[in-house]
Image (cartoon, rainbow, N blue to C red):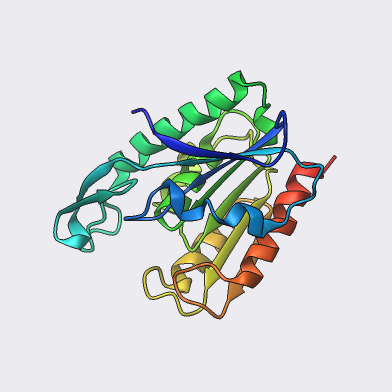
Amino acid sequence: MHLDRIEVTTGESPDAAVIWLHGLGADGSDFEAIVPELQLPADLALRFVFPHAPERAVAINSGMQMRAWYDVDPSSPLSGGDDIRESAQAVAQLLDEQRKLGIASSRIILAGFSQGGVIALHLGLRHAQPLAGIMGLSTYLHDPERLTEELGLANIDTPILLAHGLMDPMIPITRAITSREALIALDYPVEWHEYSMGHQVCTEEIQDISSWLTRCLTRA
């Protein structure tokens, strides 16, 4: 699966990349405007990659065609597994592209919001090479019980940022907390933030994301 994408660079000759996956029904442009809002240090030359998910029928929306990383069936919480694996493979190709462009895997952040966060966590925790960080916003782990059978050791020490809204009507914060606890039980280094908001991103969260990205990409 080839993924069209939007790319934004913050300096000449980027030596690090952030692959940022959007949520259900959106596209790669959804988070493009956040780049200047992050106010990252001037000496960080990054390439932001915002891919577009393919269009597919989504059961939770009466089978309407829309951009989605996987189908969502409210009657089956573990539905969409095959779609998730397929989308993760497509995003893995983006990681390969960045490495071919000269950016080491250890200088790549894998990030996502909502559905995009599910893919970021799924791929990042199983990826065979170490990443700079994994970020999941307003999201959850899909099938956490199966994770113990599939996780790779390359990213066992990779920083993970999880952030969620206390009043999220789409993905209840309890589901995110369950995901957080599953990762902590496996000894992943998880940084957790919660905000007085719904299924969205707020100013305080953007500031926390900026600090976390900077730490991940400047750590020894």
